[in-house]
Image (cartoon, rainbow, N blue to C red; front, top):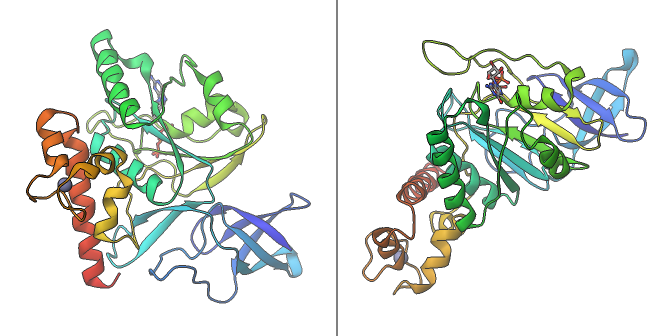
Length: 310
Ligand SMILES: Nc1nc2c(ncn2[C@@H]2O[C@H](COP(=O)(O)OP(=O)(O)OP(=O)(O)O)[C@@H](O)[C@H]2O)c(=O)[nH]1
Ligand SMILES: [Zn+2]
């Protein structure tokens, strides 16, 4: 039988039968290894699998199909392991919040680079717009303009006032989507805004720390009445790239990569090489420093992972 992993809590999974849409509690039989990196979770929500049913309707997952794409974070406690957040994604929504909680542009840039590396279409949602003053909304417009120039799509939304949710629905319809963002950014609230009957648990952010409280603790796929699905994920702190060479990192920053055509050396990494067009671009303001510093960080990480034999 073939199915789709729609929930993962650690050792147990939920698998939905492709044909009957019946959902089963499932465990893994055997070892799966699709990529060389050690993973904390061999299976992720979004994976297509083969399974067998045994008594009490418990399913044993026996095979996993090759993933079209996936997003990964490094494991929180064990540095040599990675965790697959979700797989086989059509569109990944990033919930950006200017405040409560504050989202850094570096975090957004890291997300975008990972989307490029793993071939996932990103959509930046400027969220909780109802909470912003006119001045703050202006900051949002400037950020949007900067990302439009690079080639990314943004949309201002509010789950409270339902701002642009009809437009967002058009983008999500009949596709597998996933929502990312810090804890408290409003991922579950957004999913509920489309479909209140899902009734996902949400929590007010902490008044003292102005941060979320990690309400959602495992990834789960929900199905839209209007067609398609969404994977709600626990608040993520860091996205990671694995299996990416240091020299490749620039391919995942379209603004930097475009400029690199004009560098003197074809293998320029834009660190301190002479006649580097990227460094000149930062000087002239054509390339944002925040983007460049994330590029350098990811390159250093790729280098470190390579040294460790990750
Ligand atoms: N004003 C306003 N508040 C919002 C909006 N969206 C979410 N919130 C509030 O933000 C808080 C956090 O929302 P959640 O949906 O729990 O956040 P989350 O991203 O799912 O958090 P985790 O599950 O911890 O990862 C709640 O108090 C929501 O009511 C919005 O559009 N406007
Ligand atoms: Zn260069």
